[in-house]
Image (cartoon, rainbow, N blue to C red; front, side, top):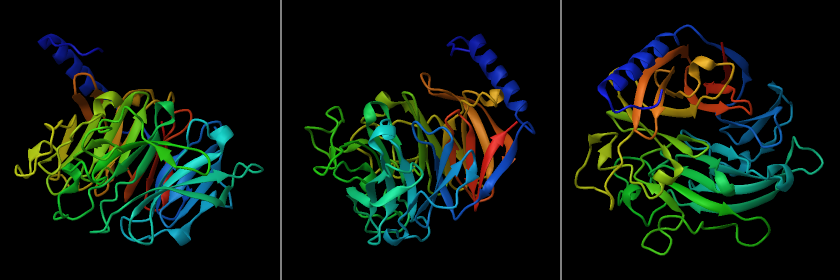
Length: 377
């Protein structure tokens, strides 16, 4: 139902949302796709509908064909990766032209403790194997003060532009509070245009908000604490930003609205005032949805807006969970009106929840502990 500003319209929308939420309980089950070494990202690649890629934090990318794991990993860069706590190999992304360019990108914490984005190519002879020697460093983000809050996800958007989530550097006393500072790449969503060939690894999209003005040109949005997982669905971006001690938040906006946004940290934690002496240069945009720690939650794991035809009860709902509770939940996002209705448990729990994934047909994948699952009716 479209958003209505009338009291009756709002009442009916809320009633329908609650009715839909009530029907979610006990409607779904989890199917295990096998065990992995700390799975933290689940992705698909253009032109390869049968293949699924699972990022393992120690530094490997496993590959599944028709949801059956193949014996040889797609990529193994464990020798480049610092794997401890929140560090490790954290994400992979495939550009729209992957079928022909064979290029793809990974984000990891390198041996110096910095966040690094590298380009690799898959083999021309074997689509299930990457060429380790094709490595090209694209961007290194200094992360000197703590091992946590690396953020760490990659997504390609329209025009082949690469979006990157980066945490604020870790700890509550990170010098300079870089999340609100436009000279730092920490605590940000970045946007770059990766370039093929042996020259410059990327260029800055000319429509990035700080091109030609004060601030790093790579920055697309700022004021984030630890955007561990975010997603893109057409022109909509959904960010799960991990809170400190009181509140977890979800921000869901059009990609155009994200441009130049200040998501509030460290002045605000979610929509709660945290430190009013540390405002960003722009007024904050408040989250579409928050939840507190009173029910045992501690760290949000952002997911996707569901589009799986096999899960019609979840269609159009944003799915998320929490690392501490493992409870998988969803709500209906009203992007234009910035409303979130019908928040409810999906009825399944994943211990040690780390990430969500979305298949070529919209299939919902969830990882926690050492297991990757598919959600089914």
